[in-house]
Length: 253
Image (cartoon, rainbow, N blue to C red; front, side):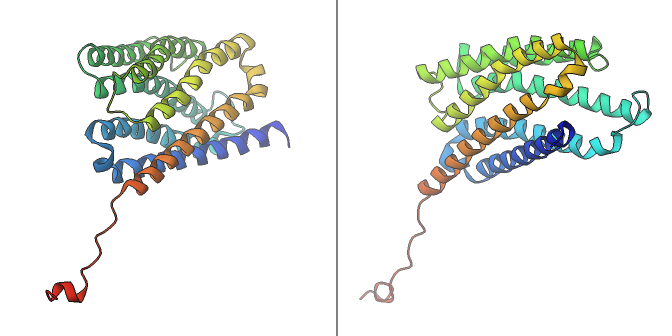
């Protein structure tokens, strides 16, 4: 299998895992409100919104990619593709940085909630400044912006795990903790790979792009497994429907 075919296969597999993950999260928030509790349900809702946006964006890019394949860099449709790719890349970085902060704001109180709200504000401001600074037109500026966002997101992810372990987010369940732990590992690795790809340049990066793709697939697959375990737990905790009374009981016999 040549490199192009490998990348296409990995893109298709990544899209499949992300769509399945988004679907599983939607099932969680649609069926688990009563069992999860209001605060935990809202936290899972935030996770579902973020990962659904990522899945939809990923689907749009995969469907659009064949239309621009082989076009010159200055073709109008290629410019639209570049703009869409840069927009989604930056948006995903902002959402990734804001997600753990939103969990702090939703699940905590006092200083924990304030810290989460401040981190969300910082992520949004950095994203807006990146747009104004030309990150959507320049790949290096885009990587610089996402690296700054990682300095917001990684401490927030680690902070959520620390708060969970210390009992400061008591209403968030263990499945969400495991989900965020997996995401934390990925969030730590992303800026490392971005520095590497920026160092080697885009032409060399093309030949190594299967490595981060494989990491994303593995991360999504593990997170999907965690969500499926949560759904199984919710199904097991659901009370059985009460059996209909026997005719003798209805008759008072």
